[in-house]
Amino acid sequence: MRQYKIIVEKHPDGYVAYPLGIKGVVIGEGNTYEEALSDIKSAIRFHVDTFGADVLEVDPPILEAFVAETGI
Image 1: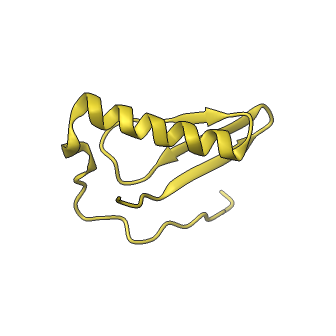
Image 2 (image 1 turned 120 degrees about the vertical axis):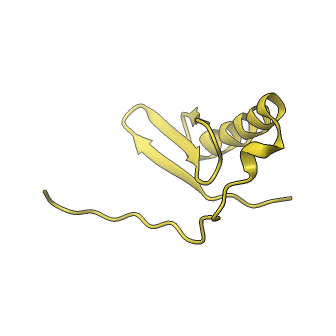
């Protein structure tokens, strides 16, 4: 089993999740953090089944992810 970094955002109407380091657009959502995480896992499986395992081969791999904030 491979591990992926998943960004989960909390919005006023629920949660949105998306993976880093996968080719293409993959989004999950839910009313709770757990629902969004479960939905993104399902969406990743569907994405791989639809487009093939090549979508998982991103080079170079993402080693770390950070959330930063700045003023403009």
